[in-house]
Length: 345
Image 1: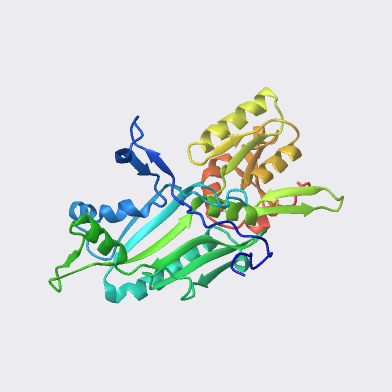
Image 2 (image 1 turned 30 degrees about the horizontal axis):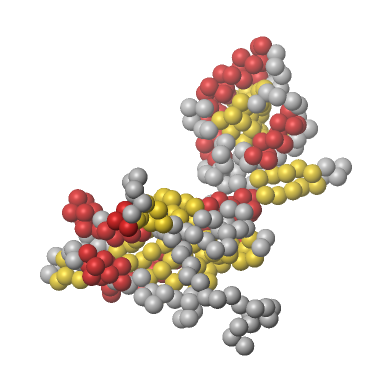
């Protein structure tokens, strides 16, 4: 029965027209001549400016133009926290190539974009590539793969990488009557470049990184330590300086250390509550490294560096602090012989 829902058997309403773009008016008068739409993606401006970029940069193919910006879609069913919203941040690149090299570049960008998420710490077991079937492809697309992440609500798309052929530039020429083709100086031929388009959602990626980084550890006493295991490149605060006390002589050294570090890293100074609570607070915020200034620091001019994930610690001179922290934030492991467990100092 065409009047019944195939899933629940309920009555269907009359067909209605859905507008997936936001319509508004440019200027103070609402008239047909002033109708405009908020952009549903960032790509259009890249295609329109293709010749401008060629003329101003004098680049040859392959040529990539990328941008990050706001997009707006009149979603019918927004939801899943920040995953599907009507206003979102989008990052897109239009990579223009010669037609004969399109397949090679498509595979290149599929691998590059997948590796980008891995490099920033996403769990490989929760990340996958899904190739679009022929029934899913846009009518102009020659191929498309999605980077998907296993969210609590299931597998969902983070980014799509598509081989769009020459559809976009050809369509713009058709309706604008402007020249947007490419002249190859080697072959002396004109043609429309093929476009490889990686298109990802900043909000979706941020949600994936947060979900993936969140962890809870239960110790022998049943106490829970909440840890946000963000990659150092994504951590909002890279280093925290924690004086063991608010005594004036100790605060002076701690402030000097803070002044030293904040020139090189996003650094936070925290002297509120016990040192244990402060460690936990930084763990929850995803801060990779904490620098503790104690009373021994007054004499030996050394501080203790504690790393977030394994709670390992190392003692080192203040003068070496910047170089060591830079190495640790870059992925260098703590040397085993220089470590002690928390509480064993």
